Amino acid sequence: MDSMSRTTIFVTIALSLFFHVPTPANSTRMPLNSTPYKLVNEFCNQAKNKTFCVETFKLDPRSALAPDQVTLVKVAIDLGINDISKLKSHVSLVLPKHGTNPTAKLALQSCVSSFDVASEFLRGALKFVSGPYDEDSYETASENILNAGYSVESCQRGLDSKGVHDPSISRAVTSTSRVIGFAFRITNNVPTPTS
Image 1 (tube, helix red, strand yellow):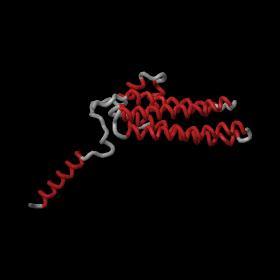
Image 2 (cartoon, one colour):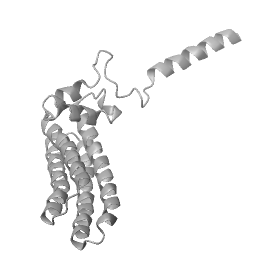
Image 3 (tube, rainbow, N blue to C red):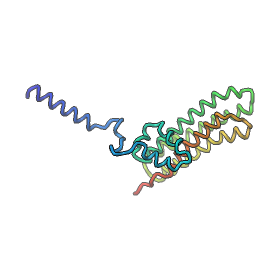
């Protein structure tokens, strides 16, 4: 076998491996005839604020060609976790502003604790939707997501009850609650697996 034949065989094998081995970038792609954000648009068409819904999902590139609702659930939960983290950081930055008011300080510290609880609920939900695909895991994930939403909203209720008014926190709580609401609604719409 001459060197030209060896080179041809090597190149042929290398190219066939390159085009047939899935990579992280293409392993979850949908067929070429798929429309970007198809599932996102279908879901967001039912949302009260479609624009906010679509723009929120566009923050995570996985949603562009999400092959199924399970992927959208994971995206929404991850977005909720990220929003809670940002919200917690924001409240921590605002806290010194209210440092002379012990009532406000206590209410804001309570918010930070509520956000920790909400994050744990969402992390738990993510584990349930990432595990075996069954009806019970999605029901538990749905309950966790619902509890995460209650935990985030408890911050605003606590601030309101203590007379602490901070529009930036209120806007962030509302936005985060909406994202968690998306995760909840998608989780409840995932088709039940057939046995």
